[in-house]
Length: 278
Image: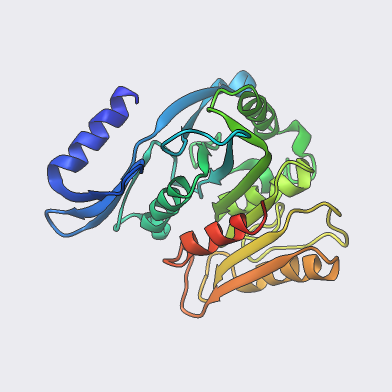
């Protein structure tokens, strides 16, 4: 563990009551002010991103010995304005960040490695739906970065990973980027889970779905609040409907009062979806 993550863990333990599961990388509990927190130990890697330099990647593998084929792995894409510096979360974080922490914990405790890269820009938005790159993604810095990240994953730089069991999930900008994995990296991913977002090139209410999606588009779970005013529920529905029309497995989990955020139900729903697509 890096020095920065040792300091984060030490600070949390000094101010909180934490319960750690046996053989878990994570602890959950409350601070002295009764604020809910979750903390998972994490490692840091740096991946080349061309002229832009290197990007920070936060990752962790489950406790214990990897299966013979390696750990199944989930790529976790953050939303705008929320960069990844570790796997420490509290109840006051925006966009339901605490539940993202519980998602990390749920995945690690159930045998999935988690890799959480950072977007390029200071605003921490992915390039998948930027006007200059949406239909010209091969020229984006994100494409170069992901090619390098995937090569590092295959080379074992993030531990022993199962090359046949890659998954992706993300929220908001990270949700659009999750869709990008299906569009620009065919055959890579077994299943996707998109929280509060839609198709790779959509932005908020502006969303046009292509008349034909890739035939090998992975099975996709959508989690979307019907009260989401940032990315309206109605911008997700045509994507889901197009997958249905093409016979690609897809499910929607909606919450009538849910906004633009992870839900308490998200960790369990996403784990079950990935487990159902080995």
